[in-house]
Length: 320
Image (cartoon, rainbow, N blue to C red):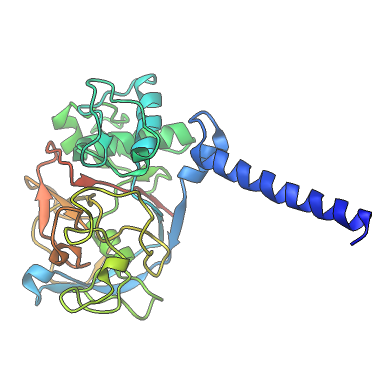
């Protein structure tokens, strides 16, 4: 190899290495870096369509549900991302009932929350309630330059998750382009979607190819009680589902918008749950639950909107 070829090779290799370092820096870098923020905001486009929404608890209970196209976060909200937005929000008029923690056992320092650590910060945020999640979504929207979704009866953006009455009676602007919680129908749609014609059955984990109770590959897609070592895990370390979304089944349950209520029996378009109830939907299973909770049709977990837990987190969506 002549000198000119060697020089050219060195330059090319150098550029590749610099590119890799920049990518790592953007992925792990400071919260003030706009590129870092954009990377952490990775969203997957979910095409619209119609599927049969089925509940595993009452297997005969299902209905035809048409879902409009939307975007869903590729990963569950990590503590690092939660903290970044939470820190910005507190300086911009937002108040939270809970500061969140890194995974199931991270340090909590009230009232501000502990700064992210080196590795555990990539685990899902937990010990935040449903009210915290919708207020955080509003803050994330405002921080990103989008229109917040959740407003009170007077049309003002909800900024205080300690105000239970205001949060629980939130009036979503479904046409707004900001971040929000998925409806239960959207969550199950994204968990089940394969190609718009084929759907993952209600009794499978999202992405898997066999029923949860006979599958030999369920552990490739989900962290749950059999393989989690009794703790939350870094997001995205299991295989994604067919849409490219990770941890839809397992790691932590995910808050949805809907009150639990009873499902309709007729065809629906963008159904958003009953007008009121006492508990909100959680979906997807977790590190501390058995394989049965991983089923895309399972409604086995729900809680009051003020309840926090170390096995529940969330992931945002946006109206497309």
